[in-house]
Image 1 (cartoon, rainbow, N blue to C red):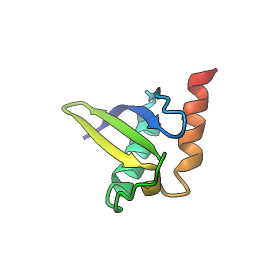
Image 2: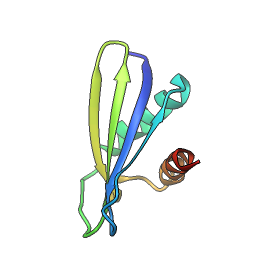
Image 3: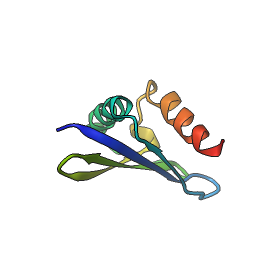
Length: 90
């Protein structure tokens, strides 16, 4: 199952803003998808005003949605997500 793209939507937080970006490079999308699926195995936790991340993973044959809270994100995934969201702002 080859990942074609991943759409990332971040919502919540103190200001309650929603930001969406997309990864359409298949190699980058595959790496992000693997990291997201691994993080989804962690307990969700929930802090007040925490961000919620929705990842829409598009493959050749299916579309899956994975939702993670900020507490579930591993430290090594945070810089990648920040970079993706910053790209959107440019």
